Amino acid sequence: GKRVGGRYQILSRLGEGGMAIVYKAKDLILDRLVAVKTLRQELADDEEFVRRFRREAESVASLSHPNIVAIYDIGEEDCYYIVMEYIEGMTLKEFIKDYSPIAINETIHIMKQILQAIAHAHDHGIVHRDIKPQNILINESEQVKVTDFGIALAVSSATITYTHSIMGSAHYLSPEQAKGGKATIKSDIYALGIVMFELLTGKLPFPGTSPVSVALKHLSSPMPFPRDFRNDIPQSIENIVIRALAKDPAERYEYVTEMYDDLNTALDPERANEKRLILN
Ligand code: ATP
Ligand code: MG
Ligand code: MG
Image (cartoon, rainbow, N blue to C red):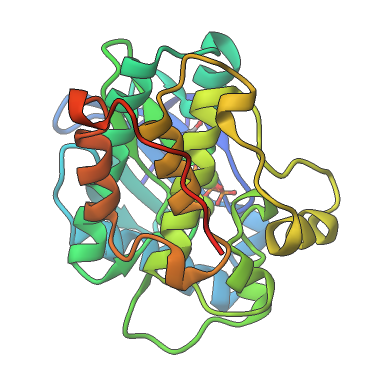
């Protein structure tokens, strides 16, 4: 069969996105399964895409966390490629589609892992910028791994243009990004709020097929309440989504760790009488 970089034998296709095709492969030297992400051939002549592809490997390689897909190798023999940990399982998008409604305890278990991964990235100065269920992998024992830091950027870097910010999916775009603002820790938190909404309800809070109309909903449509979709959601859990999806960044969680702590204590008996959070 086909080989990449001499030592990686391509076995099958795992998935693809806008930028890359990901294969299951065997590392012939270490004799183990890996995932090989290859930059699409038609993008390989574009310097900007090559730079972004490399940056993905660099930003993730600086991280080491049980809930972040590990990077093993990069190369440019045959094609531009990134070799990473192979995750046997499915994307969170497929998981939600297949298993919704997901039990509250399970939702908490999954969200806590995602929040720990993103908190770790933020701790190291890396904003993910493309958080969505398609970029989160989950295995049979419900262990979660965040992947695709493809447009991740060190927080200290220059501002991101509007074209860059709409590269990700419009469904996960924060209101301030919809207005052309740069991606920040707070826009990652907004995307985490959308993912949590989907886990709880099986639906997007701001659906639609036109990116412009979806962006306008993020900006001005009031958020639907998860408890109106399903009556077994504790108010303390719904309040986390309300806080994460605050349209005004000043009212949103400041750090992922705050959201994590809130989630961690959500089922404590003393929070049983919590009232719905009202934001300005
Ligand atoms: P996007 O358009 O979202 O930027 P992309 O082109 O950057 O996507 P990825 O999201 O990294 O590509 O990967 C595409 C798909 O390949 C994923 O949605 C997932 O289904 C699969 N995949 C990616 N990495 C792995 C992995 N390490 N193990 C197993 N499957 C993977
Ligand atoms: Mg992706
Ligand atoms: Mg990507």
